[in-house]
Image 1: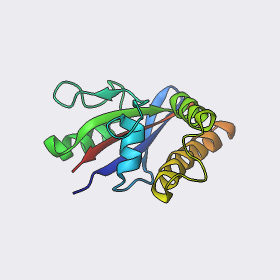
Image 2: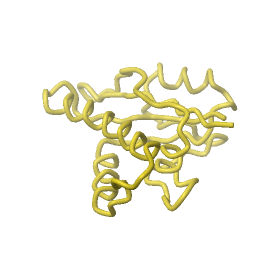
Image 3: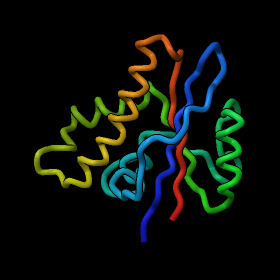
Image 4: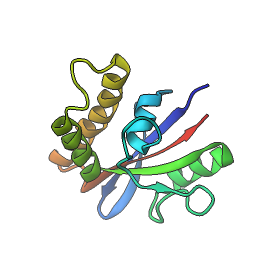
Length: 141
């Protein structure tokens, strides 16, 4: 049994969200727990949308809404990871030293995914390509 993670990035350009596409994610319980607070000591750092009431932000792109709607009830725990929240989450993880030399390779790999999302966002923001960035993700078992 596993939990696949489906992360997709959007950038805000000229005041409108633009669908960028999928970013790295995989079947990874450690990442699932860290992002959503359903496993281990993590409380979850990112707000989830109740799949039966609201599956995505009102301002999500047409492409994002289409992907989520196509997934139907198999997708769950829809989550928005904003640039600011990702920065805050990584800072907390580093401060708490929750990912240390002794941490499992699985946990270290989980942090790698989120750091890769952050680097992509930072690069686009620094270059002036985008005004804001976020990852919208959901899970399926």
